[in-house]
Length: 259
Image 1 (cartoon, rainbow, N blue to C red):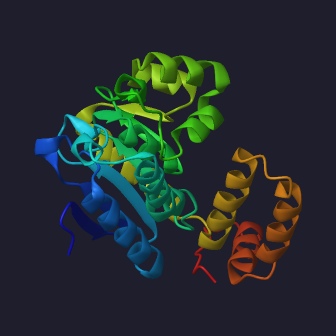
Image 2 (image 1 turned 45 degrees about the horizontal axis):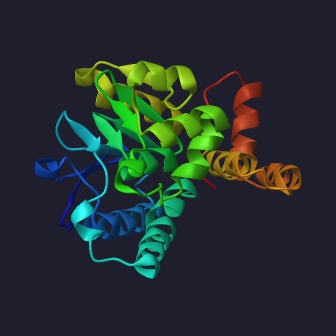
């Protein structure tokens, strides 16, 4: 189905694995196109409840973009490359109504770090490393990295990492708030699936509204509070809200149907 991805759907969790291990899973046009298609299909597939995004092998999540695609581009071509990437994949992941967690299994550099940051949150293997080394190429991040890293870890540290091109390890990434959890490599996917299974036990409509509201906050949307009020009200019109409140009062576990 895909040239550069492996997909596996089990118990509502769609695992998407970027499968270019010989290139350290570097992003190229084919990967961008496949990811865009995979996210669209996941959104439209009722069997998909949550999404786990990772890379093949134990060395790299995504070790950057495929630089060989850059050499023939001028200023307009570079801007188009960034715009297509942002609109086609990175914003699509960020705004996906179904939870997307990045399981970072190794290097997440350049476009790979940007891809991880576009997910709703990140967990990492102990050997994972993060960085935005674009200045070494005379470039800056172009897939939303300057914006999302600043949102996640603050202005000062983002400035330092992007101006030096330095990499940071998984534990430092956790201390900065770039990742939520660090696990041994062998436990990474299993632990990530445990988190996703817990999320899947909650009300799907409410989860999607959490994603929208928190994204508003991250972008300092001036309508964020008003949007929260509206979405809070919308929840009261759902079967899930009736089920959740009834189950609470009856002291039983709620069973949500996403309606």
